[in-house]
Length: 529
Image (cartoon, rainbow, N blue to C red; front, side, top):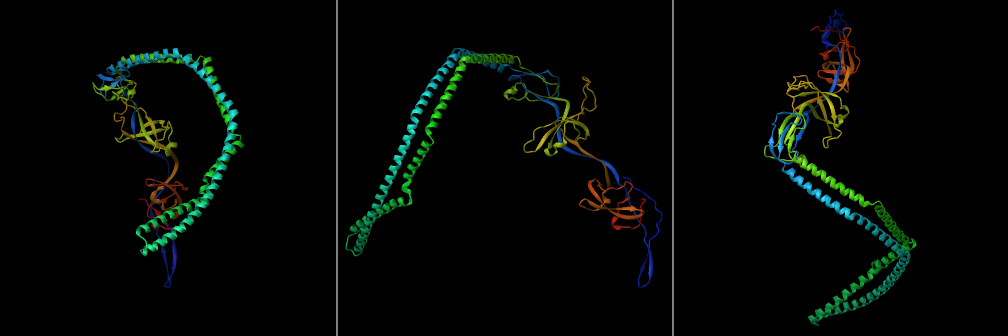
């Protein structure tokens, strides 16, 4: 931003008269020296930064081809290797055991083939005979159901009616008997109460013995208990408890009537017909198996199992010769995980790798991006990568955006391949460009991604705008050597500058200091310092 230095001619002093009771005086207001700056327009690039780390183009765990003790190690960490170089050798003992197991599997498969060839046809033809018998049995049961189902269901209705009538009769008899028993119990209880009260009075007067009194009391309690039982029995008829059996038989009668009304025997006949249909379908399937000579298919499957077992035996015998461990890629030995004499397992056996080989010709930056930023990340975008050691502005290209969101983190993984920087060529291979030696897999990096660019953004010094509230502020400008106060719309702050969304010409002189000393229309002169 440039400062404007203007030399101004002396401004004619403003004169005004002050009228007081003592007379008239005249004063001249002197111009105030002010510092000004003009707006400037720039392009603002927005970016987002992420923390990540570098990984090699490829990192391969090299396992033993067959499980066994390591008998030779040819490579050490840091050594450069080519694809196919022999790294180590393991014992073939386990591979030999696996070959023996494969020979056993071949023997079992051949035995199963022999059994299938001998029995498959007989078994399938027996299934056909069984299916025919099932059809005959189902048809017989269908005929039986057609002739007996209606009769049986109607008999169930007759039985339910009889049971209901019997329950009603029993209920009425029990009700009368209970009522009579209650009357007898009341009479007996009244007499027993009277006798007990009399004997109690005589006992108190010592006119009867203790044993006679106790016998009277026992009789009273027995009669009282029978009275309570009679009351309880009579109560069952009053509260409907005794009618449970009657209601149950009544409900069973209603069910039996509905079954008859809905012609329930027809459902039983339909179920029996369905079983006949299913049996005939099974028979048809069995007939097709016989017609198609399905046993031949079973024999072919058994033969295929023999062939597969033979192939596995071949592979097992080949593995005996695969004790040599080679590098699958061009690269550098990053780590040796096992030592001479250690037992190495294959990857299929969840073993530990013998070596880790990394391809260092290309490095990738790996970082996580919040799902909220996913729309600004696209494959092919360029990024700038920096390290804590001071390497700046390494150019990379985004070539992988994970389709999966990490659970619990709400983020996705992004990869960017670093463009090969200019550097020294290796003596052995002048076609390969070497990275800066400070760039190694695993180091932390900062990734910067351009998210947008705004052109022709108008900026003023932050101190030039006063009283900022709700995106509106005040500025003081110099117009014809006097102060003019204006309102402007403001936006973001960039360092010591603030963005204006109001229109100002680039030649506008904006006062940047001591605005609190100024007022609208005051004469000013632009400071040349």
